[in-house]
Image 1 (cartoon, rainbow, N blue to C red):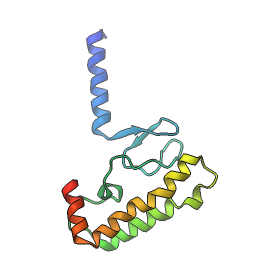
Image 2: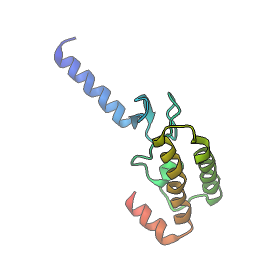
Image 3: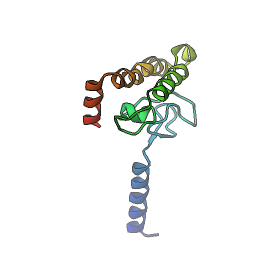
Image 4: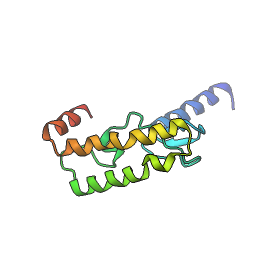
Length: 124
């Protein structure tokens, strides 16, 4: 394989990684889906990145959201990321777990407020 073929192969690999939304874990540098809560390699809590509220909770960007399912997903996420589960972890991971439920909670509040939901949809 000559230099130009290597460059093309590298560019294709970078494009595939970018299109699949795979990022590096902040803790172990392993591959993590951008919307994942935890790293599959080291199980560290991941920061939210640029994912909007809809993506974080697994919903399409739309006004028609099943509020019962939204509430279930929010409370499930809140339970998984509860700070008490991370008291023995690194300071950064404790901070991420402490702030995560609040970020997800914004979409629950917005869903019940039409103006907030409209603003969020216009930003998506």
